[in-house]
Length: 72
Picture (tube, rainbow, N blue to C red):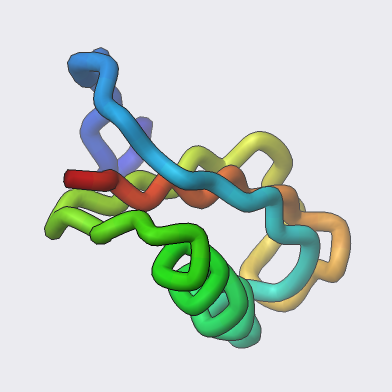
């Protein structure tokens, strides 16, 4: 799609979170997710996936992103 490539990925074990908002504050979702995973005894892997379920633009508060953080 445009300059991005879309392909199927293999299933993997992950902790996840849904984020609603601008891309500029997406890092806040990671800042919340990572400590929650660590507190639950999980060890994150190096693989992270972001699935953009709804996209209205970089600054839109209506964007919905499914963050999937791989676990070892």
